[in-house]
Image 1: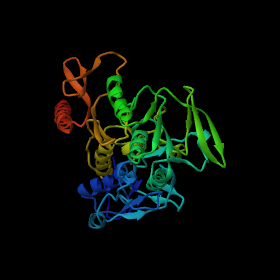
Image 2: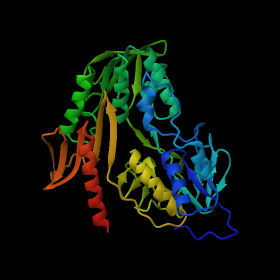
Image 3: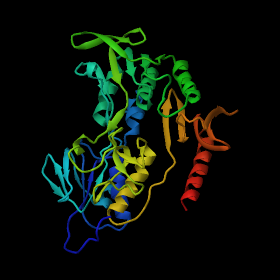
Image 4: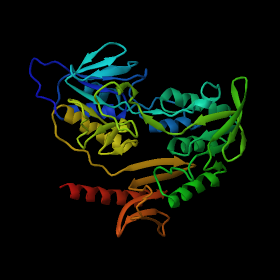
Length: 394
């Protein structure tokens, strides 16, 4: 909890991360009545922007690439934020409430961490001229240029980012090989029945899908990879490679601080109020692990950021959200709601109903679903799960 602000206390609310959760934290603070200063720092040279379009609309050959800014100019002005772009956080002096940055320390009354994720890389592919990753706007511009010229593309990773890049490439007529270490796409998020349904989308679009495969070797010339050998023994000729093997919380800069990090994921450990182990420090979005559940989706980042910002200036809100994610592959809308991961205990079953929606049930209770092109069904279930969650917390 932040102590009441006195008339002589001019320390600002400081937000680390100039993306969705950071902007929502500022909005949460203003909505709570905060009239003091807000300082937001971001390590990119851009205004705060939305990330989902980077692997969707930004890669569409028929659309011009534009920075997908999060707010209009008038909305941004109303928030009255001291935005410091191209500024990198390097640590926190929790005892003295100072954020350390490459531009010097910043004192804070309260601090919200919203630094998001960083793209995973593959060491064996680092430094080659025809290898890309995608996490930020500049990455998306580079991938777009790669897709403009490529004829044979290998995409490593069958999660959301890898599948969306593969879809964009296929739409341009590129010969795409999608390589994943799991048995089916989105294996960390869905069960095998839904996974097979999603794999069929790629196969029906003409992609070569190589599941249960990793990178075994490469062939290169003039600092460009011309062939990849997979662990399943396939040689894949390429003129470009995109690594979409997921991401990790951007918390390396917190290693020397007293902010507790989850030992498995590296995310900032938070309770349902988005408070961390350090006094006057909150976290939200992809960088946060809330009551043991990692972030990673737009809707949770939106809600968590608002709660963190409001609580950082004195509110006592709690975050309670039904997991929800969406993606677009080959002209199809994929939506995932609720608890849809494989249940090793065997209490959750996975079935497909007559409408082609994969349902996850715990006894007689539906706890989640995965659907393709069924927005009405998913919206109805999402409302029902949200109402159930609200009822259990009241």
